[in-house]
Length: 183
Image (cartoon, rainbow, N blue to C red; front, side, top):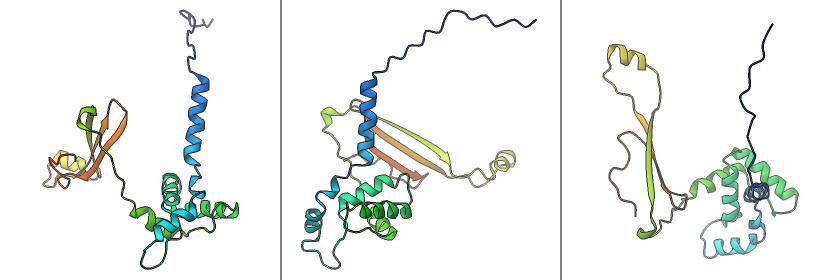
């Protein structure tokens, strides 16, 4: 005869989540992904961008391209063109861009990090390295090797107090910046 295992005590898990707060956070996240505020100022922003510009005028405002760059985290450039086509079909934007325009414009963006004043800083830095390839590591370990594999080094600096990202540095070992101060 098979005996049932003895349960010691009853399960005491209690869901202590604040459901209204959790639901609101999910709604805000969706608003971030589908924030269509660039539609309202499309013409004004384009006029400002093209004022005094030499050469072909911009057809798409920077706010639209930044919005597409957020979506690019999950969708490739041809998919971004599909999203823009859908927005044009809905009548939200006057015309859609092709994927090469999206590629060029998104790659031109230079992200900036605004550092707080010295008295407000409470930062932490952590770095890690991982080998770019594992081919030949057994031979190198067993018989020795003259070539040492390169590592990809990633260093992240964050403001612990405010939970904000301050700096990210990624480079191949031996090729990155050394002992350079944050401005």
